[in-house]
Image 1 (cartoon, rainbow, N blue to C red):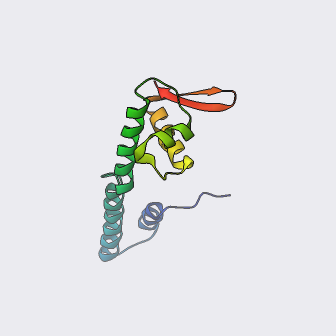
Image 2 (image 1 turned 90 degrees about the vertical axis):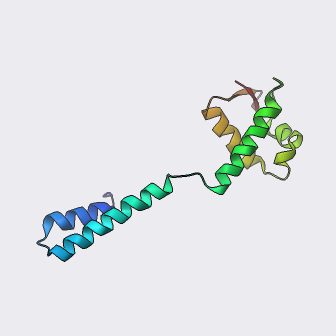
Length: 117
């Protein structure tokens, strides 16, 4: 299967392959500038959900600070901020903390336990 061309690649190919008027070149350049601007906006700042998740991660780290290893179920039950959160959400947050090397994961008898790294 052939790789699908992006909008940027398509505009670049049109610009290079066809004889264009000055207005057409200006239009393509404007569209390329809009693509750059759009991509900058996406990576500028975290979303509301990401900011809310940061506070939840801080709560998880504070809970695990005592050094005791806990399962996802125990973390969800003990942490007030995670009340009502699904195990999948808590697992995703713990995975992010693990990738940042703040939390470590141990598997004992096929059960995952998390503690401060």
